[in-house]
Length: 411
Length: 227
Ligand SMILES: Nc1ncnc2c1ncn2[C@@H]1O[C@H](COP(=O)(O)OP(=O)(O)OP(=O)(O)O)[C@@H](O)[C@H]1O
Ligand SMILES: [Mg+2]
Image (cartoon, rainbow over all chains, first blue to last red; front, side, top):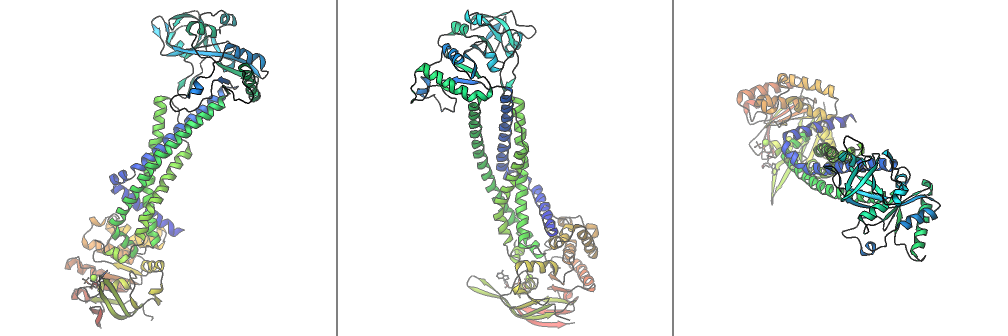
């Protein structure tokens, strides 16, 4: 064992000295490896950061929300398929029927939305949107009113021009005062602010406070009738989620007259589906990342083989001298393998630093959270070293097979 | 006392194209411990080839070479490396120091491959540099040393593992005669300390430092004279 450490130390010492003498050459050689490792570490940092914030978000949502939509969210290439686009819209009566007929459903509300700009005096928001729904929406989405009140059932029934504003809008329109009791305009119509929503914060760099709520009937009257209607519902308890989904499907099938042998032309799902979609997206992310980085790493690896051949040839005499003073073939092999590994591991360390730095920069600039897990850093280091091993072994074998007399004679 | 080196009818034949070059054409010679031998002969007579065989860098085409009572032909690559490491010290005409390593590091090399612990290595390197009068230049790289100093470093490297024999192939060939004479003083000193030396040279005055002169011609021993 003692014998090996001496040779290993010697090899590392020589590898570092050779790295220092040929800084530019070494830098250019490991460029591909730096790019590859930067990509891996950077992407893993971002995806891990997203995962963490996603998990936190799901937890903060508390009870699960049931989404009743025309189709499940998915990754569609280009246009939505014809068959999905022409599915039947939902009605208020659907939401009411679900709430009345499904024992496992605590509440169900219709919702609809439209985009636009809110104005107050000479202040205006950037592009935001208004959601038209029932007061129970607050309970379903786990929202709270921090000031004033929510609109009432009466206001919903009478299509009153009232709204409850999210924090982003309040910040833009009423930075110094309360908004309750003021009239704001949206899409050319005037609405009385009756309440303020509690802040929900950001999710995936996207604000969740950038809208206002108003009665469903009001939004339809002012901006309808071409707006789509969706339904959100809430199970009695989280354990009843599956049962609630089945009941909702049953009620809607009956209302739409779908025979039992036909599949339904609508979808009921929970955040799980969103989570699945999210995992599909990050999975694609990972595949792209692996593709980019493996190309870079291959190119870098071939460069390492090439430069190691150059190094072995340049140092033929050194190899001869080492053999003359007692280096065994495996000592020479070890020396050049270590040299290749030191070279690529140095590239790996630079790549790790750049990748973690890139993640950090993205977090600071775009507010997408990033987290470089220790395993990703170790993976980067391990992978770059493995590349040195793999692509350095052939030149090292060539070095170890040299004939000592020939090597010493080399000019 | 047993012979250190026993060479019997050794031939070394190189195939160059269709031609066979008989670099050694049947050499027989023996050598005892603590001898100081000079090998002379015209260029191309096979001196370096013989030195490479004795130093276990190369193996004969035919014939028998026994080193310390072991038949070299039967040894594995690793065993040959071990002999080169522990039993033989090489000194070359062109010094063959590693350019990126300082004098002490160059001298340390055989000790590293011998698996000697760091502290012992340091002490032995110091002693060897002391013995050749180069202790002050330990941290200098070859490019920062004169020719004579480089050869001293190379001799220290050959000495450091206390080998059975030191092989020097034209060690003064690249030095002026005054520096060459200084190097010969070093060899004389280490011979006096009990080392066995084989030295190749073209110069009669260099050869006169030895106790026995072998002359080669066309791969054969022409004369073998003890003085
Ligand atoms: N690798 C080789 N391939 C072919 N021929 C070789 C090889 N090495 C040596 N020879 C030949 O063997 C003969 C002896 O060479 P060697 O180097 O031993 O001579 P030398 O006595 O050391 O000469 P010098 O005094 O010039 O150093 C020469 O004719 C040389 O051309
Ligand atoms: Mg020669």
